[in-house]
Length: 333
Image 1: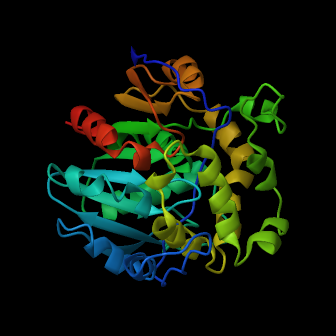
Image 2: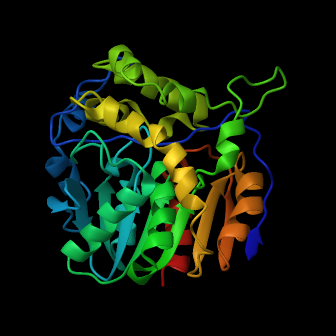
């Protein structure tokens, strides 16, 4: 194991992950006034958003493992699949995709329940979702691929490596580990001195109520998450938030995203049956979660490199895109 240890960034709270930008126009963002260009961008479909990235990026669909998945692909080279987190979509990788496409065939995927992908009633355990991605890898003509995931996408990437080692060369886990039994001890209330209290883990365990509260109002949850967990608020502005809100406000999107959390119990059971990950694993992690990842990941992966991302919160792909690009280009070779 290699650990790149840098100075700590004290955040007090942290976040965890996933929803999406769909093939429907995005709503205007209510939280702040938008320019004409911002409003136009926020109203784009996924196909239009993909074309703004250049490098020949286009969106597509594939039916695998019983679900229709939406993805955006561009570039040439070895395949690199990017899996997003909550409350975002494939669009969270927008600032890194063009540069990565210079050396890779980049495929950013909306997970089951997210954005332009199907939102079925079940199948949100990470083992099943990993099967979705393995099916997509094969459907696009590949036997093996590199996989990177953030937040919920990181959990899916880990499960992919555990269940389909023949289908991966290397994986990158961004800021979040696979659910384990420690999740049952997570606090819901932070002490006065500060700390990580992921109340939304419990909220998303509920059925029906989250949909009743958030249907058509996803922007309020999105605002709270980004306002709380971004170091640089400009990294995810009104236009991008509108893209995410439109994805969340689709029929079935809230139920799909809560399904990822409601499956944690099954994920914990599944983890107990996994062996050590033998392929190279990169852990990119914010300062808040660095102590946890540096302690746990080496017990799960025999060849783990852990790198701390400074001056950023949980959504560091958007706060520190060049750093992520550099780390990916060095690791996925």
